[in-house]
Image (cartoon, rainbow, N blue to C red; front, side, top):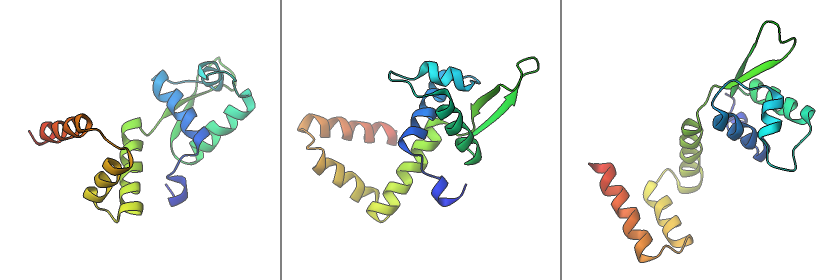
Length: 128
């Protein structure tokens, strides 16, 4: 993937989220029908599916007997995309420092003592 194709726009992320949630090959109508109201036009969704395919996030198949219908599947999992995005945030905003990133969120999110304890417990669990 090219550098600028690494990041999904808000709408592209919505399309991917729907495909991840459906967890099966889906056509544009499946995506439209799974979209919360107000739903976008079919052609809008079809365009975004094509863009995501060109960016390397999706692949498609055609089923014999279904005409020109494309069934799209995600090539990148939600976990992979989240991991890649968080690595970019850490690198670009915090100089690659996990400590700086955590410190930022602890300060900016105004974590309570209970929230900090939960975070520490998560860190302890991860180390086991």
